[in-house]
Length: 178
Image 1 (spheres, helix red, strand yellow):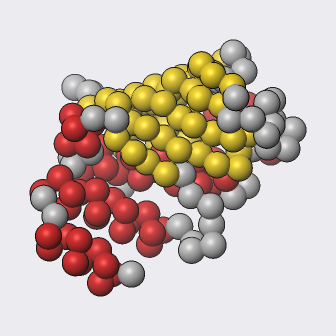
Image 2 (image 1 turned 60 degrees about the vertical axis):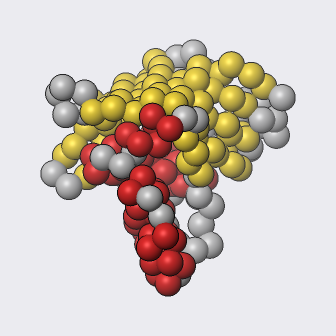
């Protein structure tokens, strides 16, 4: 695994270096058999912003949270949430962190696949990381629209807590169901 990254790192541009390092960090933290959230960048500005260590770390935390969702890992799902988390959910309801964890445990947040397309990423003056873009998910189980592909418009605010990045605010609106 490391040899492939080293080879790509040696022939990559500085922007690729950050992307490769992010991918390596994710591979080292997510079990090989686990389902993973994928990340793409909608434009060069978002790709370039992801080279900043704090943005890369927040993106990695988002991938870990998405992968926890795909793999029904309640502990990992909860571990990525700030105590003050508030979510404007795709169900058009505002949820606190405990309510979000309750919905997850009840099977109301259950996805077969997840892809995030980052269109905008920035470090705010407060030090928080703002991520904006789209999310493409396939709900399953008891989740509304199970078996259909959904597209969300998403805004997230991540904040540092020691060496971890926690989700503090999330807004997700369904814009398409196929």
